[in-house]
Length: 311
Ligand SMILES: *Cc1c(COP(=O)(O)O)cnc(C)c1O
Image (cartoon, protein in one colour):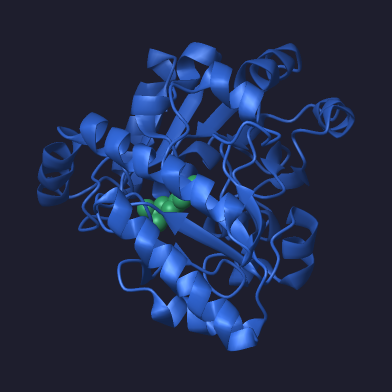
């Protein structure tokens, strides 16, 4: 969040920020909170709606924030297309690359000015550090922001940096193995009677599949799905899971499951959740490094238990 806040620090009260309507709940709250305090003004738009995006860019924003794939609905935004539109409007483009990490997506190569990472997630990868990084395409921007980060004291501690560097060494093999399991899990969920809809750009019929295939090196290990279960069935499903822990955060070696409506995206409020398409039966998975078959068995047994509860 500090890395995002550092990117936001370029904004002045007369500046406009164009943010995604379905971003990470914490990002939404930070942006909303700063805008309410008069630090800048903001507009949340569906960046896949070209007309809405064009109209918003006509308002001459100073900064455009993209999160792709988005949290939790895995919506994919065409970074190169938004970058060229932002450039024409004289706006800077920041991309939150937390869900894929540099192993799977390189927004600077696609025209972004800033890349934001929660290093808490895949970069450290072991769920034992909270940190972030802001990377700039332009060296002068980087120096200016580094000086500001130092002045405000948001830089990480040496021990956290040490742990993050250790974790970073295994980033590529970790995410490759996690992504392999995620693909198998998406197929399982897609075919299960207790599942309404799967959100994973790796699925050929996912609306983000084509763009994800061209701008990403892989589809990653995050996915979400809408369960075809009522509250009782959902509770049984989640409490029957043995390998997926009900918890926020993501990108670590352990598999996690989250219920965005009551956890990560609770603070967004019902109305903003409805606009973003985050329903009460939506669940988000962060696939860890456990054996693929064990994860599949765990999910399918727990889903069966959820269904049985409702019958
Ligand atoms: C978790 C997350 C953040 C915030 O990261 P922290 O390490 O918790 O500060 C920002 N963006 C996305 C997409 C995230 O998933």
